[in-house]
Length: 248
Image (cartoon, rainbow, N blue to C red; front, top):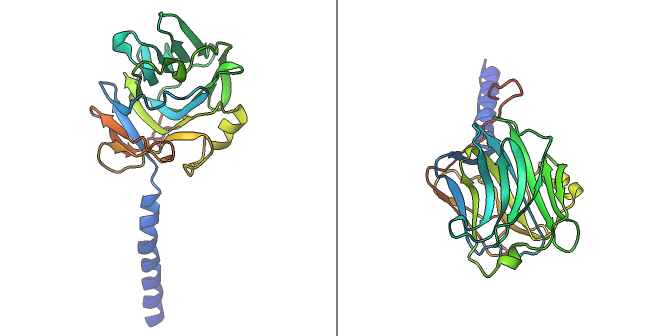
């Protein structure tokens, strides 16, 4: 009997000690309700970039006509804007110039899912191939336009935002790079958490915070660009949904 009691105590102790590590491993993100929620990354934060790659994971619970997933610019004053957009359930990577002209790479055959996580990456190669758009690591759109990047709009006050328009859902693992990443590069890291010291990584928001309104930048070497959650945006546990629509 004494041996049985000791054995049970050891089992209970093992379960008690294991629980915190399980809780600590819960994946987190930030949630938006589609009504004025976003993360503010500041003004002129990435104005020095010629080449760039912007990537993140997104889940949309509802769909509206025109959703900005990421933007660097200023809509209200007619100044230029660069971003990632979900429009008519297609993925777009637009560059709007000062004169009102737009250039974009767009997915013309890929329909964005509702209730499912997907990975987006927008790549700009100023001295080379121009614009490329990736969905879940696969190339879905290109445009040879390479004339103007963030650095060409540096004379304007560009406001950098994640999720600035109508997103009802969640966003996670947002990254900004000062290089035009290849498809192989994107595929190699899209499913893993980075250290924050990778070459070319200039902004990295894991959204693993438990409370508060500050999304800490995990790539501080570039400038420690912490983001501020605006509106009703909040940190939350990730919601995973199976292909049949049931929560996992």
